[in-house]
Length: 128
Length: 181
Image 1 (spheres, each protein chain N blue to C red):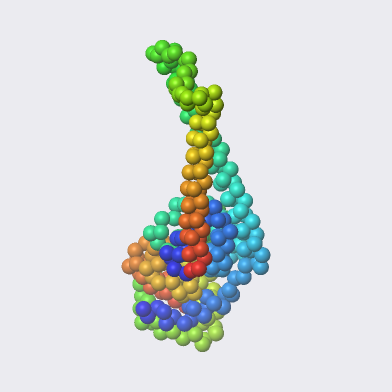
Image 2: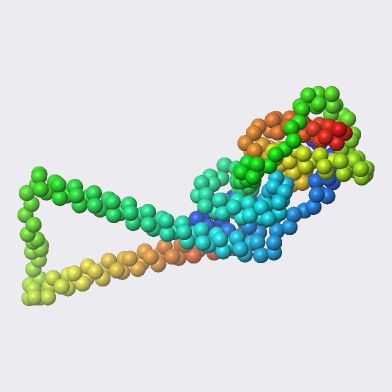
């Protein structure tokens, strides 16, 4: 393109002086960015809290309305009948403990796998 | 760094690694500031508007889809921020009669702007540049100083490449007329 040979325009633009930013510009900017990030987090937190509260209130209201006008519910809570022979006295507690143990174990395992994957990913990015 | 890598950085920032934003600041703060300073003459205002540009970019980072390069997206925010500021500050540009451009040939303009030795002419040219509109100043500073390709300028100003080329030719003629009159 012939316009790229317009040396006079280039020189005139350059002679207008190259602007200089103050030396602490990036540091000041980053502190403002951190503040904006905090505000963003807070806003998301407040919004989700409001949303959850609104949905919960709606659900409770709807449930109350349905129960009052349409449903007849027997609220008596019945545990499943489980027998463990001679250990029947402690059987149910052991059953719950084992179940809890398995769930905690699974949670720990999957969390470990997820963290490992995440660390590998960020390691690859840092190598680049 | 490639645009692809910049997108990865943006994803990480959105996931909470805010400190990575310093990379974009270090890479683009000077060029964004030099663009704004050509539109807004006040040094203090230009620095403030550069800050606003980066803050807007950070707040709207989740809207960046990657359909253009990050620098184009950022320059567009900077340009729009500066243009809005000129409207608020009511910066008035002298009126220009477009009919004056009709008699000027491209060959004459080429010959005049190819020579960068004549000091008086350069002074006149500098003065003429100050009388350009915001958009015209942006156009020539992106093209000549930042050395951006026409396609990228078109993307940034949301115009077609042909339109940008036509306007660049027109600005050169306008500069010539402002210099000679």
